[in-house]
Image (cartoon, rainbow, N blue to C red; front, side):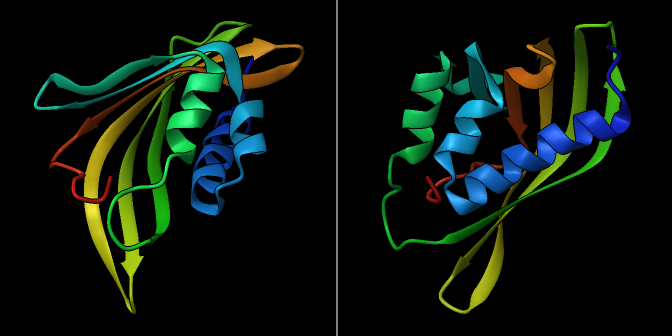
Length: 140
């Protein structure tokens, strides 16, 4: 089953929606059991690698410091490469917006690189590396 652009887009949309709505069941379902996440700034890893679906969900579910914010993970300019019948690489730009109080603010921009894997006829995130352009803190 070869991945289509629509398939890849749907996985990334589910990822963003799961984080923004704090739907941790969805977040779990779109990752492989052995998935990994890492976040970098200036080429240096600042978080991770987080290994395993349960570890990733626990990290995402941990409340951030400070006032709660509504988040929006905006992914655009999706490009896929190195596609096989069971794997594909997808990169996109990430704009992280947080609404603290009344005014939404761009918290960070980044390039996100996803490795998707086909498991049980479902495309899932096997690896995610986000390279931030600016520190995403104190948002975390």
